[in-house]
Image (cartoon, rainbow, N blue to C red; front, side, top):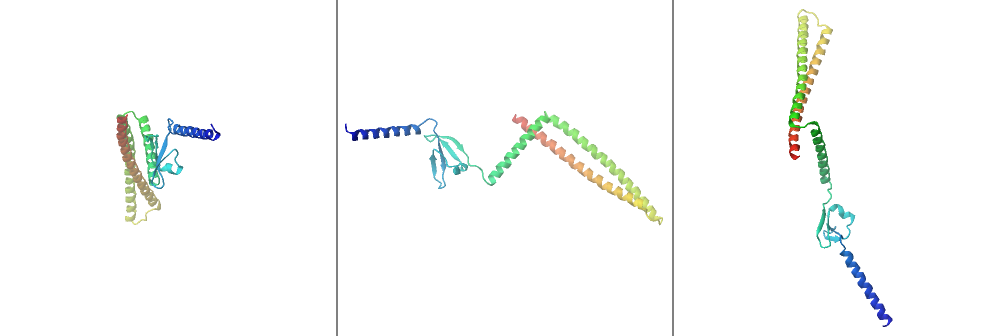
Length: 206
């Protein structure tokens, strides 16, 4: 056998071995590919995926085209902001639910706490209302005294006018406090009602 023929046989053997190696590598177990859409809108299947296409979403597929995993597109702009806001709300709700479970063991516990809290607030309102009535009585008395002095031709004293002004300022302050307590009363009542409804929901879910 001449040298040229021997060399040709060696080259063919090397090509055959290389082809077999390539086929084996392609058919290797666990080998996966990435299916994505390129910038021209064409679907591409490749052993790697360029980084710029990752945020647009892609599929991980096997050699025979079976979908192993789907990676959804990353949210952008308003979608990203909305998703972030939703995640924040979920975390806040989870934290509130955990605190609710730790604080109460039943709806009855919440009802009892509501009763106690509202009774306390109502007691404060009653005290303020009584103080307001007392201050108004003093204002009436001071006004009558000032009117009496004027009817008798005397000038109303500076002390009387000062006392009257202080009482009127106190009246305004107490009225503001009563309104604030009434708002607190309503807010507390609404919050306890919401807690009871939420407790029922999370109790059903468990």
